[in-house]
Image 1 (spheres, rainbow, N blue to C red):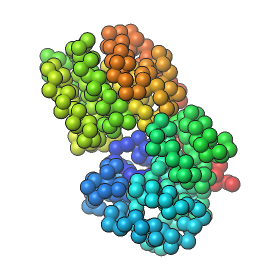
Image 2 (tube, rainbow, N blue to C red):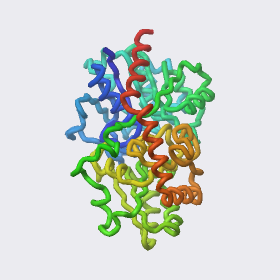
Image 3 (spheres, rainbow, N blue to C red):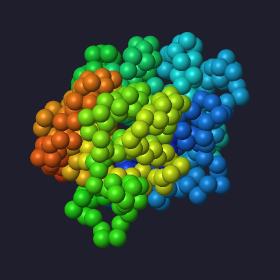
Image 4 (cartoon, rainbow, N blue to C red):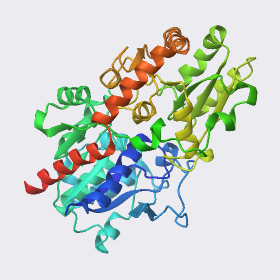
Length: 430
């Protein structure tokens, strides 16, 4: 039996691909592999809370604070009050910290990303975190990676990191910060492209990085499993006379990196050529997105439905699932995805997808086979792809069916967890 300590930056009810990845690993490893699993994480819910007291945190009286789907969770509070200098001073007192050989300047960068967690020593003293074989953390470039390495050293166990490396985003390419990834016993990359990029940047052997893709709960999103009385997104949100209108869906963090802002700027061009269409956005919002959204809503005939985590009950919320099942196109022209679980969710529902021709996405989406690729932040190119699919039902069905077949063959969570379990077993024997 493997005993796994997971250390993600955040955990459910946070809604992000990295957090959901850890959640499904933990749940399936415990239920199907009889593994002992524990989650160690911060009390942050949104990204802002990782470094600012203005963000959203989960309180210790919340029903999901200590347990989610029978998985034990230890949420450590984030300290916002200490200065960077005092945090560095505290870290330098930790015996295991010195083996990392990290400068104060680099450490400051990680601390600015957050989360700065306290209380790990107390939990070790109380035997809460002992007796584990492996620690698995995510994602770069956040401070919990450093804490994971300290814990691994103290417990004398291997440390694995799934960095979800966004190599098309310049802020991820700080070579001084990247060096921290060399300290892990193993890295898991979502794509071969991510692996090659990490190898070039880090100069480490090929066998130190394994490729394991993301997964999807196929039966949840598969349109063949529609229940007669299940929630219907169009019936609930569309005007009654407009329920036959096409629906374009975006699901993710609503910011520039994910392409949400680019979609908003493209909407006027799309409706100028195809008026009977709804645009649906699901996910946490940003100030920049909200400002642009308020401008676009003023345009006549624009139909936008905007849902945030406050409107949802979790990653497998019935509104979100129904949105994927009833959408005509899934559109996420992002440059900040190491993979993109949402593409798999769309394919599981047999929907065509549009992604950006940048980063790892071209390895995930095969252009003109199971989706279309567009230039990042290019409203003309995004508009062209959307209009092509809106006007060609046969092409939509063809791309969606090809994606569905690919998901069944390679991207169910069961297949992902099996590969991960094998790696854990391999590390345990060394």
